[in-house]
Length: 238
Ligand SMILES: O=C(O)[C@H](O)[C@@H](O)[C@H](O)[C@H](O)COP(=O)(O)O
Image 1 (cartoon, rainbow, N blue to C red):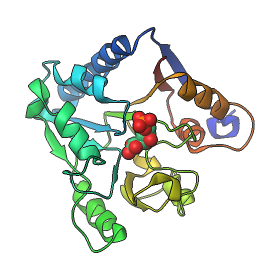
Image 2: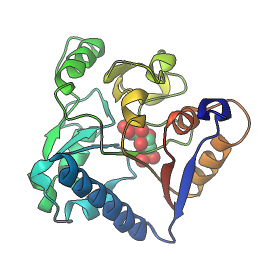
Image 3: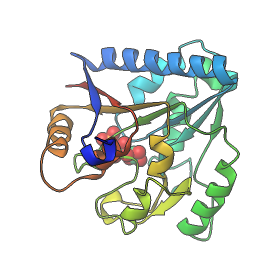
């Protein structure tokens, strides 16, 4: 039966007793995938999420000595704030990932001053076309409401964000639950990644993930896992 008919979310669960062990393992996986990409196509393209979860993972990855000068790092999504804001994912990445060996990576941000979030998304869409797609690695987070990237359940354009056939790279998001307006990669770009990791921590996130995999209304994280052409690697620690 064709996968879309199955619409079963395919994932592998990687559970760890402590968060530092998760950080080291996820960093090792990502570094290996980027090195494989560099060996195969001369470059590596990585997109990472922001929020409060990734800092330990970023620190572990930053210290791994791969050919970072051949790696481009961008964001899965961004709040519509300057890098100087404490809410900025670009600021989080600069302070935690683009350090040590990884300081040699090329970073492509999403936020820039613009008349509107729509204008910013359109110019990002044009600018990011120049990146060496597809993503080799994408690291997603998840909120307890089942959002991932900026695919918030109350986003006003959620169908467009989750359109697997979208030609857009970056889309604007207005979602009351998301706080500031957001810029996000489209699901189409995310699921085309060679390696898709979902990094979640805490019992509440595990419960939220298990609920999202169960019956009932499909939350964004489930729609991403169902649309992905390969199993998503879930990394979890209490
Ligand atoms: O900009 C963001 O907030 C992220 O990209 C978002 O998708 C994040 O991964 C989840 O909201 C989980 O956030 P926490 O790690 O803070 O729980």
